[in-house]
Image 1 (tube, one colour):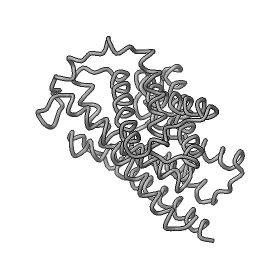
Image 2 (cartoon, one colour):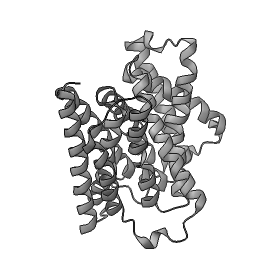
Image 3 (cartoon, rainbow, N blue to C red):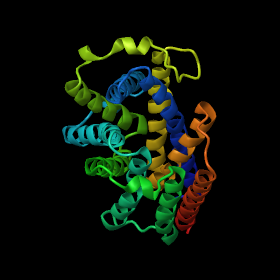
Length: 308
């Protein structure tokens, strides 16, 4: 793997998590307008699937032709890799503090590294193994996870958080496998389409709260209806960042992408600081620096290993 390819892939993943960081704040505005998290996930996945499928029909219709043996892998990718990541996370934060849920979910890079090393038999630099727990420690500071939060936690909430981490690890690993044979837009479009079909069965569209999309939330930084913020969630919060993430995974692998993606809570906190006046403490800033240093060290070590 060339160092330039590593740099390009890393920058793609950073671009993806930056947009996801902004998307967190925008999604909060849509939910404050009255759209439930599950319904937001449904419209996010369905609208994104339609946009990508239309684009592929125009530019690369052959990419949509699935062989019979590909149906099940793409169905699993859409259902587990795209739908379950969001669903399990929403269920987790409904029962335990967001910081706890995120710390558990972002243990996924360790699961990815173990799978890559012992199942795919791909060696990883020692510094990459060290960087993962160090970055998790930094995330604990950023998210304000303290001893007081650990008392009386919901067991069900913890299990949902673990499920979110497993689903996230699965998403990154399966994405690497699928992008070996198809382009990132094709993998994303087909996966989202399967996810949209599954969601429409669970939550039929005739019961969607369309009136909430015309509401302007009190937390909106701009006086605009929720559907306009929802459009941002679909295009710049889903289609573009997921495409960047998949392209990044194709270049730097599931292990490199999952470690780099640990920057997302840092970037989301920075966006909330600017847009919602959610001031960061000294400990949170220190945690952000630790995560940034750990991710940088891991990627530099992987680039050096690749060049040699």
